[in-house]
Image (cartoon, rainbow, N blue to C red):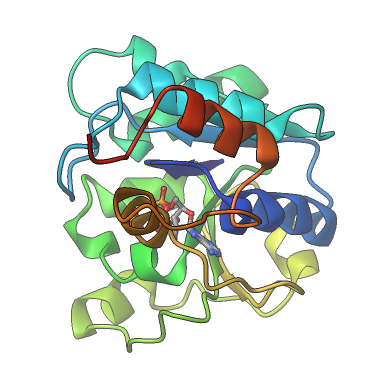
Length: 209
Ligand code: ATP
């Protein structure tokens, strides 16, 4: 699972999902937009629109799924609940992974039930070139004893470990940067898939009117 606000989806998300799938030999990567993200300001674009942009961005990419399950649940989007529903679907023995970028990982102790995440899944942390801050003491305590150093060790069990990965293509692309560019009338070409850019322009999303 790669959760996020996807406000909007960009090549940093999509390329990471493809490379993660290859590196870990994953059957599928569920990309799950949050309905109501808790730890940030409300997105300007509706959850339905963010999901539609994600579907356009994924297109026919093998193994990537635009997964709208958080949009169907009432109330806040807790990753623990999403992982629990994936666990129900795939069964107790499936190796389940929650992937997140280093910036999101730094705030993990603020999430709902962070210990429970490790009961349900492994965590894989993706390096981002523009985010390199150190871990807090609380975060180091949360992950103590869980870190493994290879995909093979991670895949020996269904859940409970943590792996940090430096994917082949690390991109300093962020949705914040894209929203700022759109609001300023600057080009976002090659930062997101063409179909996503076209839809954004057609629907005048993220632009100042
Ligand atoms: P924003 O700038 O609005 O905070 P974002 O670009 O970080 O957005 P999110 O939707 O918040 O995008 O990210 C979803 C997940 O994808 C998070 O775990 C985030 O760390 C990760 N991610 C986002 N951009 C990249 C990138 N360029 N490379 C690797 N991981 C990324």
